Amino acid sequence: AGVAIAMATLTSEPFGEVAGEGAATLYTLTDRHGFVLSVTDFGAAIVRFVVPAERGAVDVALGFDCAEDYDAGGKPGRPYFGCVVGRVANRIGGAKFSLGGEDYTVPANDGANALHGGPKGFDRRLWRKVDDGSDKSGQHITFELVSEDGDMGFPGEVVARVTYTLEGNGRLRTQMEATTTKETPLSLAQHCYWNLAGHDAGTTVDAHVLEISSNGYTASNSELIPTAEIVDVTGTPFDFRLGVALGSRVEEAGGYDHNFVLSRNRCRRGEDVKRCARLSCVSTGVAFELCTNAPGVQCYSGNFLDGVTGKHGAVYHKRGGVALETQGWPNAVNELSFPSVILRPGETYAHTMLHAFTCEAAAE
Image (cartoon, rainbow, N blue to C red):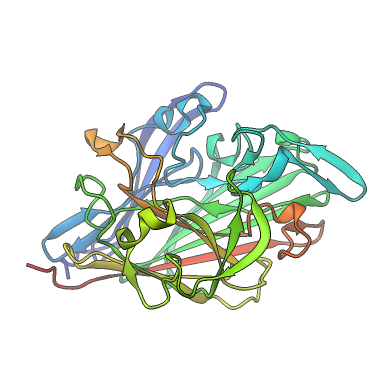
């Protein structure tokens, strides 16, 4: 689908300025098939992803118009649209952990817990573009962030990199890597929200069909901290193995914000990258399959979106987008039975996501 354009391109433009971080830039990669990826060095965030659907190009990623809106002064409850979150994605219970005989306390920013690395996590930092180009594997751009020893209370200097590659024909590869000078918890996630009807469609994702290749999810308490129990999805509103409309049981589930178990992987090179999910929209015919080597995928159904104004004046209401965040399991740093998220000197954290987009004929 879509009209082939002559060549792949990379362009850049100013994207606002954040106090204490500096001027942000928006980079846009376009492939020969008409897929368009815009990313910013602020938070290494995906700002838009345009699919050349049958009825015309559709931007399926929720986002904002400038870096200042992404930063939002760090206010709690901001949506983390499209950004890379770290050092530790999801929640650390009680905002504390023990490692190597030392007790660490990190800033709480979600009640008594730490969420997505704390109040000034990787999402609120200006990353540095260190590479871009085109080769036989497609068009890529790489951002790097140096997180100093003690950043948000975490030990060790961490160097994190994220590479986005438009591989052609609808394939978007996200590669997140990191090294550390001291033993530290390290678990990154790409927090894009998708609405395959279009970010500005004004509709919820309730009619999207979601498939998740998972037999269990991590049960959690009222603060969304896992209890260490893994619950069989059979006969529950969390059974997405055969594909089901997101909205069909979302109320019964109390909204989705749950970690689905995929494997016992630790995000290291050489691990298998396996299909974990599929999301599709009948009205546009747009779908993607998601593959990863991460041990879990968080399905977040946009429960707390409250009419926030996004790109080009689009208004994002409750369940106006869904995030499928491949990740280490929540609170794994405090739960010995969970796959470890501890990174040691000499190791490389390596987390792959692959979105393979397709465009079928839309339903009439």
